[in-house]
Image (cartoon, rainbow, N blue to C red; front, side):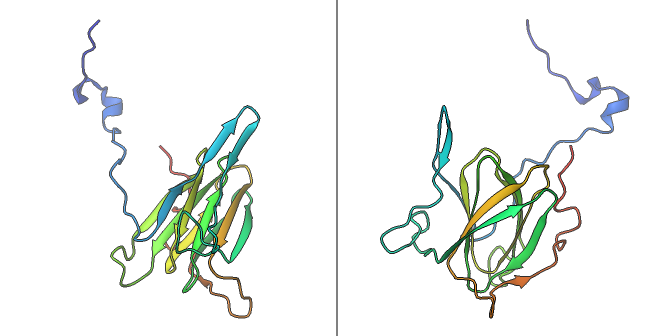
Length: 185
């Protein structure tokens, strides 16, 4: 049997006006942001993901200049949006467990960066073991738009100081009210 290709003319008039093609073009990136694959070992009893290996000086081997000073766990309940903030000195290394998923939003706020004002929107977790490196000056946030709680472990190169916090807030909806919504279609 030979398959014949169709053309737009073969589609009924009730549908042809609604046809579109999803955008598969390469999305803008932000200078210095890195998504780093991690080792995920799966066996009959479950899985184990490496979060970070430290060298003898306490630097993350996946980012040799990144010295871990503090590690934290963040629980995101369904419907939670934690956005946006940036740091002048701190850099973040985020890890979302493969069995969880979070929606991540980033915006480059560094005025001399080649990717100034670029934004990124993507999913972490969702079956993948990855770490996300966020340089200082890149505003970041995350949301749990699904029905189950999600956990994120994050490592930072500065210890939190409640007397002088390096945490500078921006509006959660600075990229539009719909930025954190699940895209339909």
